[in-house]
Length: 234
Image 1 (cartoon, rainbow, N blue to C red):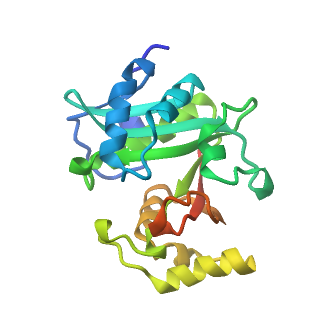
Image 2: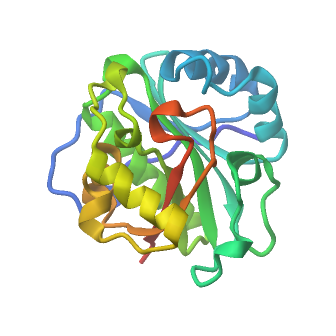
């Protein structure tokens, strides 16, 4: 599989109003870049959440899609997904944990990109690289024929993440607990209390579908939970 450069045009970002820098390039990655991806994974995520070398190798072997953002010769951003099938009216068909979400082969047929990894090198966070990478994912998934882009949203306000400067928000925790324990529906403003979910909503105008408990038990700040969100592609 050849690495494919992603041509960034104004059309890619036509729905945004910001001007973006062009000091990095986004490229589709292949298995020859496994070493760079493994090194990036260790830098971008806490040790207990970083994907192992074998997991990354398996994702390439399963022909999952990976887009990398390069600054000079440094990999500074990574987005990874597999092609899956989404039925928004049937949660029982959706993966019940992160292993199912990220470790399965591409589906045939498919209608969605299940984005299981979106990371930016710590030195480049808060800059335009995050937004550009997200929009490159949307553009590429649409070119693949996807109707939806699905994310498993972290929610660190559930218990708080001191390393990120995110305090615990008890009103957010209570809202998620009510969904999990009593099968209640949260209001949009409940989700937006969390800054990570708020960021995705502002950027994507996405729809929050489900809260899945124990999706990633290692993510202590999120209580192991994930908020599944959906962006419908035009």
